[in-house]
Image (cartoon, rainbow, N blue to C red):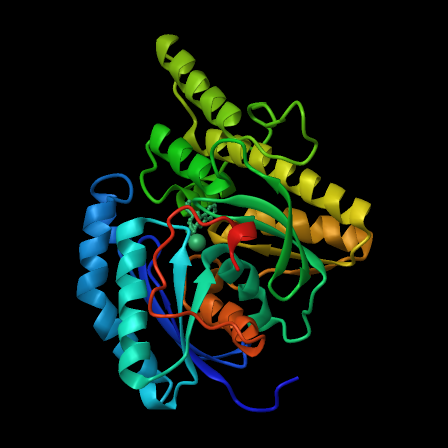
Length: 342
Ligand code: KG4
Ligand code: ZN
């Protein structure tokens, strides 16, 4: 292991958070600055890509400056500049990539492009100093739902993915349908705490030809049908019960598939990551299932679950020490697949 202190300035702008951080040796966060655009997009009920791009342009320089200042350093002190180059929204990604390239060129620093999902997975290294591959990770965010075997740093086997909506997308769409607004995940999480998870029996999303893949569009449609049929019969909808019952359906499927992979692959470490990993019921359910099996369970604090740049700095460190360097031709790749990275 490297005994030098490698400090990486990391930048993340793939969606609606303008974020920069400095991370030392992939595990120690020296600064973590997040400017969230959520209040800007709330008015529209979801992320408006063009508005997101413009806001990133306005905020990226002050956010990077603050990250360096909080870490008590200048760009000259950084060993490398890392940036999310995909997947994500092309305009927002381009802002981060352009900024990182300009900094790397001006300060003559190595540039490391990071896959956003690899960042989410690596968020667990920050608060779990002993965590090392191999392990299984469930990554659930607004754009992705993947069950992954992390074989080594930078080496991933995708066990399952969603066939339609991502888990976070389903939370956001159901929240909108039941009038909770954007962003839906935290609002459903809060409403569900006041509701009965067994009030309504929404279906579990099953995929006929795969025992691992996810499908969340069915449960989302059945929530919409339930609400419409209540309206037609003039029955008042109990929002908290709908939220709790929908959440139970999603949490049960995610837990069942994740534990099937843990059991079959015989690995004794399991991690949870991505924005939906902040969900209280999901964290509790997976912790309980892992405890029953004597499997170590890791999940980041909520601030490292939703988009942030510290997780990009954690992932970048392992790329950096394995010799990965990108050129100034690094481009944003909106549909970058985990397997296509490197
Ligand atoms: O990882 P993330 O910040 O962005 C993407 O890479 O997509 O994830 C955002 C997603 C949103 O869909 C949001 O509703 C969901 O994570 N989310 C939650 C919770 N907090 C955020 N979903 C369920 N429960 C939560 N507490
Ligand atoms: Zn994300």
